[in-house]
Image (cartoon, one colour):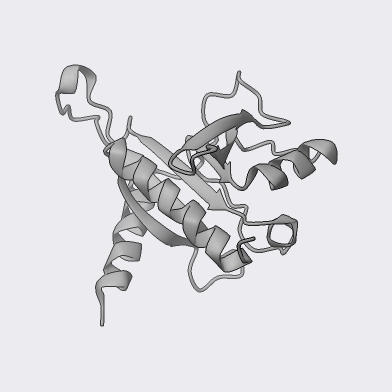
Length: 163
């Protein structure tokens, strides 16, 4: 049986693989509202510009898609009060299947979450599962401008590069 930290690392690697494979610009541990009581950190934020017919247009940034991933290894992690911040156009909770089953059984609503992603049996990919409370009519949960979201991705990557 894996420890909580081993599970978190494994889930994080799957998220990173998915973001890279889908050609997103991304960063981990992205903070918003730094230095304020509202400061929040999102485990992973990815961005893909809008490029119809693979052409960059003036509105490619503003019409691009932001995805947020929160990684939770177990119910104690889920209920810890850390994380569960979803600011993206699409938002995902990433967790083991056992935690997903607990959330379903306890009917825990995840209103700003498009899907719950759980590792496949092989452990090589993430499989989407329905999120209770998700409203398909809602096109986007994002309430922040693209420039702020992109700046926070840049900042998170810059902080990781500093010695």
